[in-house]
Image (cartoon, rainbow, N blue to C red; front, side, top):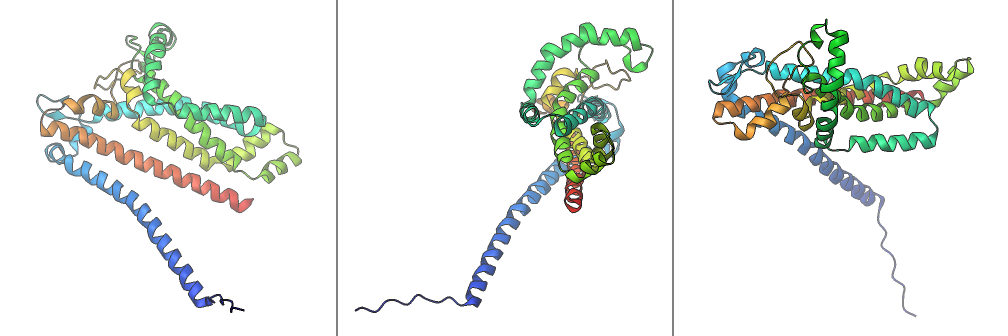
Amino acid sequence: MGSMATPAVVSAPAIRERVQTGDLVARLVTFAFAASILLVTIVLVWQLWSSSAPTRHKAGFGFLSSSTWNPVTEEFGALPFLYGTVVTSLLALLISVPLGLGSAIFLAELATARISNALTFLVELLAAIPSVIYGLLALFTLVPLMRSYGEPFLKSTLGFLPMFKGPAYGVGFLTAGMTLAIMTAPFVISVSREALLAVPREQREAALALGATRWESTWQIVVPYAKLGILGSVFLGLARALGETMAVTMVIGNDPKISASLLAPGYSIAAVIANEFSEAPGQVYQSALIELGLVLFCLTILINGLARLMIVATTRKGSKRS
């Protein structure tokens, strides 16, 4: 009979060394992936910073405080675009946050599982629609409605306020803010719903056991517990509103002026870059648009970072108390 081959015995130190080597390789590979994201961000910021040097050297900090935008004389001020971006974004939040929070509470706490799943799917579908589609819908539906009904009604009832004076064009800050509200509401709903669902069930059961109603348990216990996640959803919606381009370009009116009236046309940072960059002659003109992009880029990164930190803090808080 032939002798049977004896299997090779791998020693414990060899196994340990192999495992440690595999862990080291995996750590290096994943670190390279993470570092590449940071590297891309640094390269983008550096490219925007270096490309905007002519405008920074010519205007300095006056670029952010000047309201003059005259490519012929190469006088560039970012204030009208900053104003338009901030006003439309705040209007969007004023509309979308109450709507989104109320919808999230219903989906997470009050609706049945079948209704909640169906409506959540629709919300996620709305979040995936391209912004140009929202712009087209707003241009052909919202703008005529605002010009014929919405803005005349506001003028007749609240016309004594400076923010509702002026002619009713249909396009302007208010229409752009409403369009952004429709676009940001799905993000507020989705993130707020996840934050509410992350609240431990024991919190709800304890409140109900003490005699609270379903609504009292939701509003006084669940919502305060998830407040950081809800704030994170607000920041995410704000970041989306700040960086939105096509939809705002179609309905804001594209007029670089600062007006107290919400009915007046305006301009935003993203809109002016999209409209004028391809036809901008001269190095200073292009660098002014690039500096606008740098300002918007920094704002968006800052807001998204704060939102992510708040969401992570809420998740850890829920896991520790569950």
